Length: 269
Image (cartoon, rainbow, N blue to C red):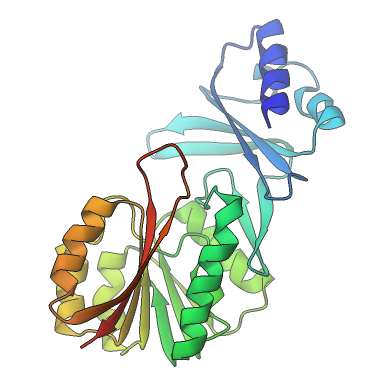
């Protein structure tokens, strides 16, 4: 990864490609595929050195080169070389992840976390399960083997597109993709009486728009994966009015930082 980054910088600097202001490298767990993502104003092949992608692909396992340019509605994405995604293998599943999709970066611990989620699901055998912050399906797809049916909720268009592809690509026929926010879907999901609800919210945590409906119609089992101990503590203090904390598992996904992933298993009382 560092070699690819250094080579790309050398070529860009030599060609004085000033349109590029940010570079990101993504790599699969195996290291056999990588994406190079360039950000800048109106990026295109004319903004780059001649044969930039093909030359790098001769030296590195480069699957694709992506250009991201800002627009009033976010960013436009252009495939400048190869393809626009990686295929990550984890927990016996294959996850397609594009340039703007979110995926857990710690490949050494991801299988361990997936196996714990899958084990809890297999013991519970829920008829209905829901994953409220599904992303590309990292944990929701792992629950599909244990549940009668799963509903995955995702608001980000890039994530939702990859999620739909991953459901189909892994041959899952009991998984429904619901595009939108967890707040928009929570009432309908709880009305369906799920046996298990998985939540993996951003750093801000759940908030009252999620914890309130859950307390009013509490599902039997909640799996709460948190990336921020402070907001997790705040949300657990609320949820423990109707739940018992069965276990806490801490995953040091981000060594040498204060950020800890925590999986909480909550049983309704």
